Image 1 (cartoon, rainbow over the protein chains, first blue to last red):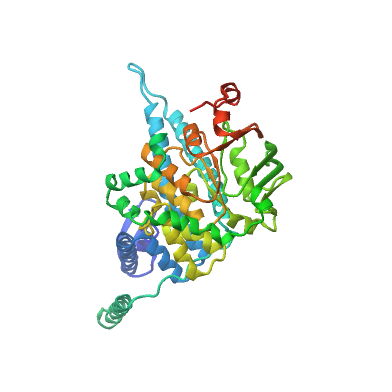
Image 2 (cartoon, chains in turn cyan, blue; image 1 turned 45 degrees about the vertical axis):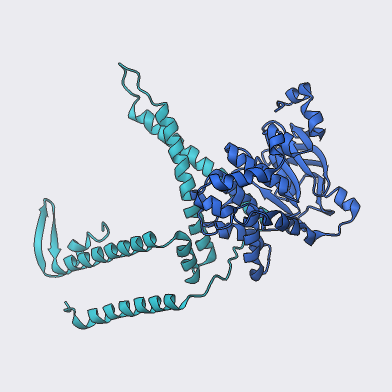
Length: 190
Length: 288
C-alpha cells in the first residue's frame, strides 16, 4: 500500500488536483489514482484469499500442496519447520515475558527504571531467545541425523487426487477463467 | 513397588480415566502391543553369542568438544543384547555426550564404540543409526515435522525403506506406544506425555536393536510416568537410559552405571549401588 501511494502523484496524465507543500507541489493524476486503486484492490484480494485458504486448510495439507506444486523440497521443509517451531518459540517468548513481568515490581514511592534501561532488558531477552533457538536448532539437527538425515529431504509419494477433488479443482479453474474472460469482454477499457 | 508388578493393570485403569482420544489410542494396545514388539527383534535374529554378550561395546572412549572441554575421559561400558541399563550421574557428567557417541553424532577422539560387532566410524555411521534409536530429552527437538505421521515416517524414509513398507511401520510404531489415531495431529497441540511417546515411536519405526533415552521421565506427571514405566518394561530392545529419577531406576533397571566427570565410576546391580549411601553422596546422587 505504501509502495503504491507514490503512484498517485508520479504517473503522467491529466492533472486532477495539486497539493501545495511549499517548495514542492504534488500533482494528482487520474492515471495515477487508477493504478493506485488497482494495486490496493489486488493486494487486498490477495490477502483475503491467503487468509481464506489458511483458515480453512490444515497446515499439513498446505505443505503437501506446496510440495505437489513442485516447490523445491528445501523450501517446503523450511516452511514446515517454521510452522512447527513458531509455536515453540512463542511459548518460550511468553515464558521469558512472564519471568520479566514477575520481577518488574515497582516499590511504592519510587518511580520505575528509565526507558533506556527497559530497552536493554528487552534487548537481552531477544538475545537470549536467539541463543536458545540457535541451540535448539543444533539439537534438532542432531535428532534428524540420528534418524538417517544426510542433507537431502525425502518425502512419501502421497495420495492421488480423488474424483470430487478433481471436480472441485476443475470448477475453480473454470470459474477463474470465466472471470478473466468476462473482465476482458465487458469491463470498460480506460 | 508390589502394586506396579503388572503395568497392564495401570494401563487398563487409564483407559477409562482418559478422554475420548486417549481411550481410542489405547484400543490397539492390548493385547496386541506386546506381540508386535516381540516381532521386531526377530528380524535381527541369529546373533553369535559373543557378539550378543557385547552388543553395545564402548572401549576407552575419549571425546572433547570443539571448545576444548573434555566430556568423556576414557569411558568403557559393555551391554549385552536386550539388557536394560540405567545411566545416572550429576549434570555435566557426560551422559548426554556418551549417548550422542553411541550413534556416531560424536565420533570419539580415542577409543571405539561398536554396536552389534561393527565399529562406529564414518563409513558405518548410516547403518549404526538404524541400529541405535536415540530419543532426545525434549520432544520438541525430536518432533520437527508438521504432523505426527511425517515425523514417525522420517526415520524409515531417510534410511531408504521402500515406500510401501513405511505406512505399516508407522502404524506399528504408534501402536507400540499407544498413540494409534494421532497420525494427523500436530505435535504442539499434544501433552508432554503424548509427545514423549510419539518421540519414542519416531525411533521405533526404524526398528532399532538398541534404544537410548535421555531423561524419559523428566517433566511427566504421575500418570505419564506410570505409562512410561509400563512401556519401558515391555520394550524388547537393549535399553540404555540416562536419568535422575532414582525411583525409575529402582523399579525398572536391574543394572545401573554411574558416571561422574567424564568417567564411569560405578557399574553393578542397582540394589547394591543404591544401598551404598556414601558412594551416592560422593557423586551428587541420592537413594530413592
